[in-house]
Image: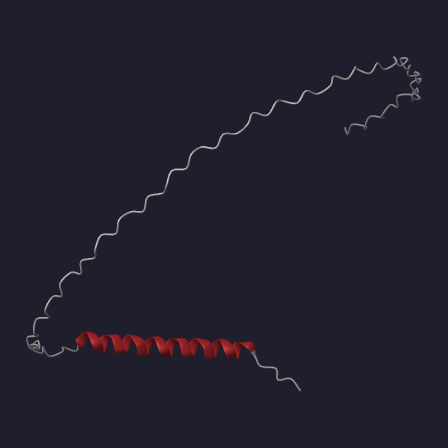
Length: 122
């Protein structure tokens, strides 16, 4: 069976919990503002020994490789191909087509109807 709770009960519970939690936060923050913390002396750290610096390594210079220059190859000249010319085809003239005219339909005319006027009140 399903339990049916009154929605106003949940609303009252929500309001009560939200008010209780907000008061606790405000009270804690007020206590934090009123507390004065004691000042502690700064600790002195012992002097650390100096670390000797290492000499910077020197690498020998590597010569840049030079690419050998290759002679340019001589390419033979290729003659341009000549395409044969084709005669233009002659097409026969087509007869001009005539579009038959369609008569427009006539709409019937209706007599104009007169609207009777409203009688005026005396």
